[in-house]
Amino acid sequence: MTRGTYTYIFGPVLSRRLGKSLGIDIIPFKTCTYDCIYCEQGRTTNRTSERKEYVPVEEVLTELSQFLAKGILPDFITVSGAGEPTLNSGLGDIVRGIKALTPFPVAVITNGSLLWDVRVQQDLLAADVVMPSLDAGSEALFRQLDRPVNDIPFEKMVRGLIDFRNAFPNEIWLEIMLVDGITSSEDHVRAIAEWVRQIRPDRIQINTVVRPPAETFARPIDRERLETLAALFGPDAEIIANYSGTSFAPEDTPDAERIVELLKRRPCSLREIAEALGLRQIETAKTVQLLVEQERIVEKHFGDQWFFACPGEE
Image 1 (cartoon, rainbow, N blue to C red):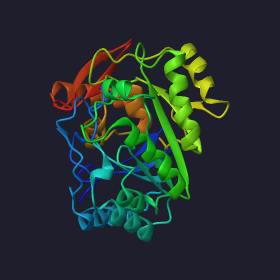
Image 2: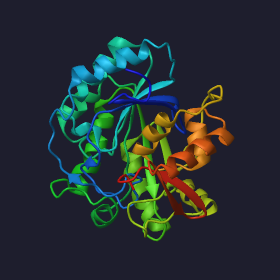
Image 3: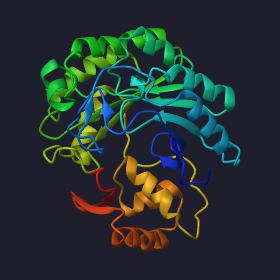
Image 4: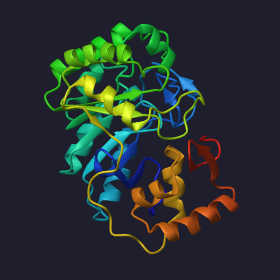
């Protein structure tokens, strides 16, 4: 098994929130409880609330063990995926297995839709950081933005976030995605902020649409307006707009397979590819152009930038 040929492991990539993050993808592509209008993965093809072992726990942990033997040192090991990871009923075994294999902190990125389920809460207890989302302050906007499965009403979802806060002893970093023309008014944001005060997250992280979304009408809020809205959450709210953490030492020869694996999970600009994988931008541009010519990746225009994605992942 060589780098770029893993089934469940990807990265490390340089994450705006977690520094150098080694990702573990534990859910099939576009299998999710939501079909968010802003999703960078495109529209959900399997919208479900059914929990089951979508990928084998032992295979995930074996692959991680083999990767860690390379001696690569991430800042975080991040359980996520191109879908909703809490749908995997083996999540708890995976998190506990990671903790048994490595001293690195474990983060779980989730849309938060299943945190009302006591089994999901138990599965997450061993994580160091859980990173859920809250995009709306009402049932109507929840349905408009996140387009959840029918058996997850807004009240059930948001009460689950509050209950999880009471059960979880470690850090919760709550991401709030604001979309222009939908949740860009101060009244809408104040409604979200009221729920946030009850959830009591350790960090409040404000975001907007920065990559090509599932629906073209999902538009970004400009920086100045976003700062005004972020202030409604209080002085501790932060806008997560830039990458953070320690950079990699740049490599001279970009690995085409690593670029493809990254783009399978989200569209990226040329700069984002280089920064995420620790590559020199001028060399990355040559490899990206070759991949475009080979039709292994495609170009997409969003806002004033060009992004690259894998065909079928658009």
